[in-house]
Length: 346
Image (cartoon, rainbow, N blue to C red; front, side, top):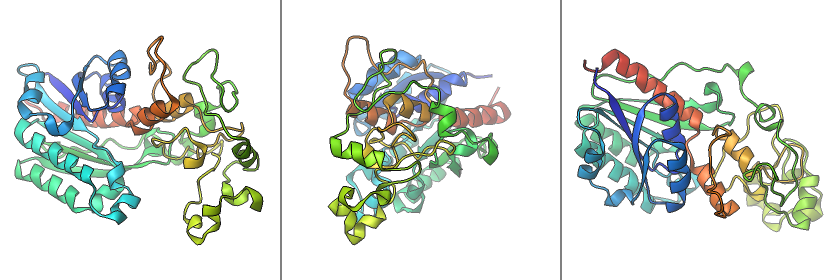
């Protein structure tokens, strides 16, 4: 049975890669243009980090990375912000060409297995139709699934589009692993962590750090009940932009999580109180970077910060929020493993 190797495009700090590693795959490389991701990616995964813009990567470079004789698996998550509801309302984003570059590499590399993860909104846009058309023209069997992440043990109300393509047959995603009564909640994931205050860093865990709050924002979060938001404040605490009619379209900003429900979707701004429902359910602060990493299902042992090197909260928030949840990476890898066991050549 031929061995298989994986290359992860848009790899970031390695959430998707680590899912494949946990499932026993040989990941040979991750490619990303964000140099700040190098340490975490290489420290935690048996793979090399290659800093390069995907538009500058050639198919020959990728092919040379695969060990001779191995089945080629090519995976990736093109930056999802260009496909958000807000951006789609504005029209085509310059970054949409990254998905076209991904399709071009697939066409030239001819990996036996391909997978892509992205936001659900991508499915309704022409660039996604173009992407699938390229795969089908290259004789791939294409399948896609709308995944509600709590169904698979990810403690976030995150929905994601997962696409598979195979030269052998259609890949079926594994069945959900967590029924609703077993969804992992905020309490399950972070309830055991030591309390910290806004602006504090734990003496025992440098990733358990929360952003400082202004006096006004401290008053605001103290006025916010679990599951609440700015709509629960007294008038003198409400921002002018929220008093306007359009302000009601942002019901979750400055919100607190609930202990006994999954967390909201982590984003690049998940460490900021004013960027979503990222307030701790009980403590008067936004979630810490450790808490965000746990919601993204990174294991506690995953190292994000190099000893002796300072990393800003803003950078950590971007790295963690951009990542594919490790548990979702496991589900994608496990689905591919099961498929290969059934269909790959001897």
